[in-house]
Image 1: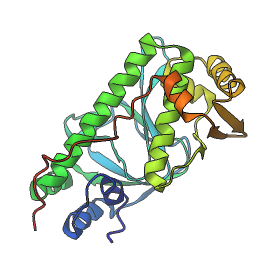
Image 2 (image 1 turned 90 degrees about the vertical axis):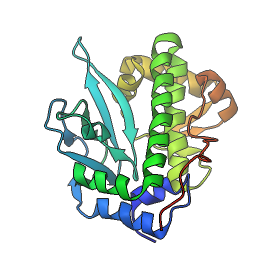
Image 3 (image 1 turned 180 degrees about the vertical axis):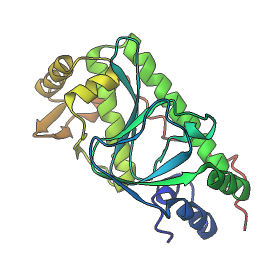
Image 4 (image 1 turned 60 degrees about the vertical axis):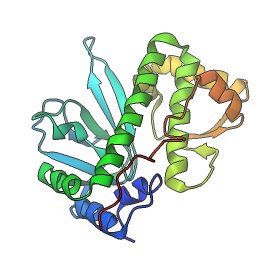
Length: 245
């Protein structure tokens, strides 16, 4: 085993060779500690590095014209962060830790080496990037077209599904590690509105809450409320090139 969080995440979808795992592990040789609230990069910063999350959780967001922010994506152990930096000279999003975290920075040249030497890994990253693009499109469409309850339910399901991948267990209870204000920034709602939707989901016995923990009681109903499609389920990787020896 390589000890690479990046490799462990990707191997959920494709069985990686030891050579591929070792190549991914090299991206995680340097580690940087972060505390909750620490900013990894700001919009407009020089885009010199890309990152792998080794431990903890982060989020990315952009500022909008009225001074508020729109949270774009939540990141977990094994995720690559700031991949847009590969094609821009300045960062196009702000990335902040939502809990204490460890990230592994690497230079763009390291990505060039990885993709050149391991085309199957390159194709896998491309495929997962497309799945993420479709999932983000779903969420942006929901902000303009679905109810507040649907948006909150969808974000909670997204978090649950990702944690299931990380743990390998069909968990029902989880800690979103987000404040109600942050859930609002992810869904285009105020924190007051988020609180009301969480209360409604609780009263309808779709979820239960204890402290910061959320338990999904009726997942089928929650998926119905959220109009939820798991864009990372049933992915087709039959077209990936063979691994190089």
